Amino acid sequence: MADITGSETELQAVTDGMPRYRAQVAVSTYSSHGGVSGDSYACRRLADGRHIFILSDGMGKGAAAAAESNLAVRTLSDLTEAGFDIETSLRTLNSILLLKSEDEIFSTIDIGVFDEKTGRLKLYKIGAASTFIKRKGDVKSVKMAALPMGIIDDLRIDFVSVRLRPNDQIVMVSDGVIDSVGASGRDSAPAAWLTAAIAGIKSKDPQTMADLIINRAVENYGLREKDDLTVISILIK
Ligand SMILES: [Mn+2]
Image (spheres, rainbow, N blue to C red):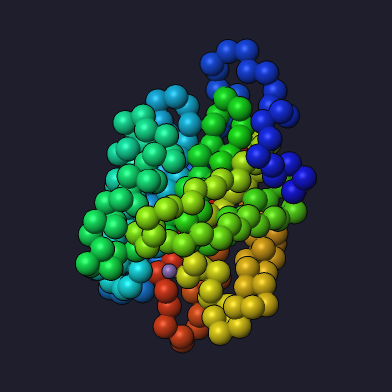
């Protein structure tokens, strides 16, 4: 997508504090271990009109993984709601996880921050799966390489900034969704099936989008053991 850029120069002048955009959000999940998902998520609207979407995949399975990713999402949610910026919140969480390192806690973190005044979406990824952006039938994926949280002291925090338009659809997923196809052959564009699936889903309704992707991923696994699956789907208006 041409306007995936860190530049702020194309920003339209925002003359007042009124929201110009709206975000309609839906989530769909599937848990592989008796109702306890190792994925955790939170979708919040902050007081300043930013929406924050957080998705964390705890390493391991079942209750232990759930506790890890829950801690990560709760901490980030609380810190950002208290007014800390994303970078500070991520560094604080990383320090907490490192302190508990005898338990070998690591979690992937995927954050989307959408500003309803500017239409700008910032994506932060720490060990997280690609995010998909659909505009007029065309689907692009955003991937960023970084180790999961709680592994190294010197956390590198990067973000990708995208200027969104009304009718754009955003899809955030946990890795279990992408890996439902070709779990063994990760080298050959593992996200290709999902790019095609999102392009093929004509509905603008975020709940329909999220539910259909979960259904397809479960079908893709067939009888193979499934990972936990989470889809956060957002429609910009
Ligand atoms: Mn996973």
